[in-house]
Length: 97
Image (tube, rainbow, N blue to C red):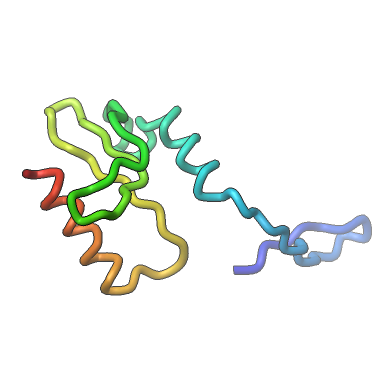
């Protein structure tokens, strides 16, 4: 999606794309510091960052909500293909066990 700004003459011009190579790390840092933004203000205690599952894959963040339920936080860009949904289900099964 293109984002625009107004130039000095009042015309809308697109912002130039800027590479952001550490986006996932920056987002993880921010979410780890502000987990309350994820569930409409509900407090989440982050208990793991990049924990390795029994399937040999790494979750982005793992937390626990106020009721004691586990919260799996997995960051992805763009649309969510079926394999990402399967990956998330694997994580949920691992956390549940």
